Length: 301
Length: 300
Image (cartoon, rainbow over all chains, first blue to last red; front, side):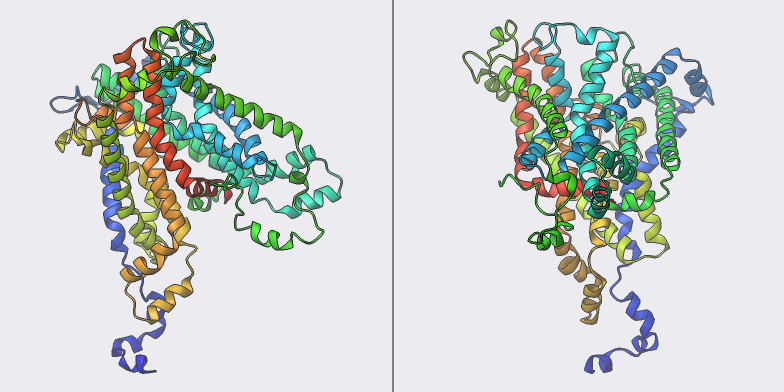
């Protein structure tokens, strides 16, 4: 009671309002983080778009050239090849990683003996950097030194498969974990009911587990699509885009245009195209899978 | 380290535990052995372990013998020469630079993300919602796509070829996921506790430090590990924003070893092993936080 008496008169005027707002931080607390992120991530995105309409060699100032870079982008046969490669690589990696990670994740969500210790070992590749992993496989695929005494990286299919495999080796642990989390949240009753109805394990997997995991599959797929851009390191170290230009995916092409030939305007056009494509693809995926609740999923991260 | 850390009951397991004495079975599909899945898991285990084994084995083989033998054979007379070579060629410098980057990135991310997530959860007005949405979109921005303009920004700020040129962008790109993880965690803090503290006249700042942060330890450790991992393993920003020996970090050092040691593959692999040891040590200590935090991604 004494507390109420001691409160300033303004507090009594709007008690309901005050109760709901009491102790809430001001929105301005978010400002430093927002400004920092805007400066180092959002502004560069806008800047990339601007630079794509300029010619710039990294020294001096960017010079506006209108649509030149974008025209070049459309006419460049390397770009067409690179785009196709990027798509094929993303799809192949997606198929490989999703199948393995889904099965491993569902398995790891169970309660088998030794499962915990195995899951811990499975996770180890994810801890190594892409750089370290690319170097490791570069050595293991060396024709003189390596496990397979053949010039794997010297052939187009070999180099391509190597990148898909190395990417999977590194990222499957991460996606396994996502699927493990998803599978753990499937209610037991569904399986109990199915078992009573006489559904076998495989029937249960296709009729319960898979449909129940659809949101998890979407999340994991979006992360894989955006993440396939990080294959840059793997490509740079493992194949340098080769043999020839056979594994020069878009991020690698951009790197070459910018930091090898100093055509930063063109590199920015490729980069802008990448952002547009990645964002567009994520949105399409989210729509196609009827998964409007993007927000709630993302909030769970 | 108990081997069943991963199997630790999650929240949903608790009631099941209580029921365990009842005759009712747990999940039908997990109780029985599943030989096919077990075999698949074993196959993947072999795929994971062979490269790691080959790396360890080769790193213990002397350079002249390495080219003649198959890396799958255990080394005949193991030697630590390769590790010696790596450690005497500036590895310590690379390690300390990387540690500086990782610690600074974690510090910046925490200092900026915690107030942000706190506002997003507690103050649901227009501005805090807008701030939160910015970071939702941020998850989709690939760092690859903005290196060119960032290079321009870094050059204009006169930061090129410094550790700050690596630290600042790395921290910015670690923020979206961190904010999302933290918002997810802070949301679980009960409103009643805030109201109780508000009745005591606590300021928002005091609530943050005495209530929110202590209760959000799980989410915070996930963020710490995740952003440290990103900083430790980052390659693109160091590659493009630095060039001299002074600010060189571990990943870039590894990349250079490949050309420096040339055919001395065992030395290169020894450097890869050494680069992985610190992060592996952290993993052993903090596995539960990392694994638990990431598992939530697919759960909702």
